[in-house]
Length: 224
Image (cartoon, rainbow, N blue to C red):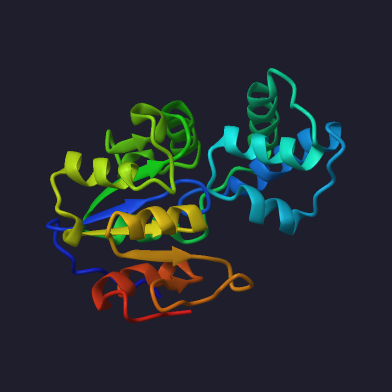
């Protein structure tokens, strides 16, 4: 049963994109794994997710180069993005329950992602989520700072007109959580049941339908 949030628009909820709004991280990891195979690096799905989740694409390719002990192709970024988009043509979906949650929240919402602005727009459009954010989209490529640097979240909060103590970040990756904590913005970490874990600093949840209740209860309450 969906819980209707009574939050008023005096609060900003900052959503990550991949792994929080849309299920695209698996495709990106697969594309990087294929590049890795061509460089002589074989990774398991679990290791690939640990290495790549939430990171800038060029950082992921640099990690592959370290593992391979050799340089990636000069057009590695284009190769990975092209492979990823081919996979996503038939697999891209919104995170289960997220559209219903966005429809019921009465808070100001934006997206802040390490992905290029064009990719953010296309993935939101393809999954039917674009209408919930309008122009409130913030790409690390626009300011030249990528998570775990806190600048992206601070920029989104300032541009939307909210102090950090009136913001909450919804993240799934370690680098995103680090960026939020560095920005001194409370963070709720979305994870699958298998990945679910809680620390003293971060509240995590594994069902997107729990988000409205968590936003009302505050970060000291966990639903999973």
